[in-house]
Image (cartoon, rainbow, N blue to C red):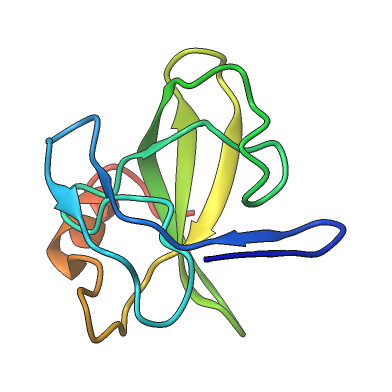
Length: 112
């Protein structure tokens, strides 16, 4: 399914994690852009869902924070180009929520 707006293109599709090889299912509530098991992602977007980034490097989860409205946020750093970005931790999802223990492992590194 693809829905497009000027800044956000909604693409909800399953994929295989490039870090741990887990077959990531569709999200029941939003677009999933990271593995629910290891929290790694891939640098594929310049704007959410546009698939316009040429880098394609692994986005490593390096920290987390808590946003007043969005909840837990995962902080990423691209292992190829160094881009830093944040994305929402998917705490509630009927298909497969993100692994909270993986988020807690990040807290051993740093909490932003």
